Amino acid sequence: MTGRRVEVRGDVGPVELTWTRGGASLEVRIRGSRGVIEIAEVFVFAGAFDARNGAELQHALGETTDLRTTFADVTDAAAARRAREHGVDLSVRVEGVEPGLYTACVVPMSGPLHDRAFADRLARRFAQLDVTCVRTHVVAPASDVTIETEPMKRLSP
Image (cartoon, rainbow, N blue to C red; front, side, top):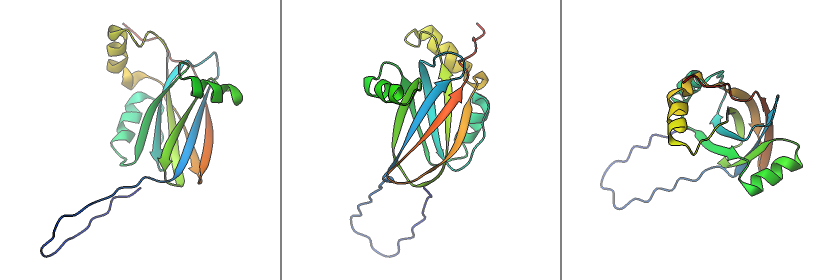
């Protein structure tokens, strides 16, 4: 999606703006290369980006205007069923994307995310986390991509 600049001249009455996202979906499937991935943060960018760690991913976040982010985890029953059907650990569907080139990035996580101290430490160390990205072409009405990734490395205290 691209931004559009609109110039309005003269008197303008009430204006109603409608923003409609694309009609395609992208199913992101995640498979652990060594062991099961139980939770992951998924980023889907329009265009081509490269990131190997959280710092590079954060830089890419600042470069895009079309980003979707979500979590995939084994507690989502529908996502777990779709994952089993495709022989992967996790699966998440990103709706409302325009057809075209996208980059899907996965940040695998493990640990007690419900523990506030752990979640805070994870957020502080995000730049150090490994990231796996794959480019894919989305076509309407639906596309899918499988990303194989390593489990999260142990965080330093």
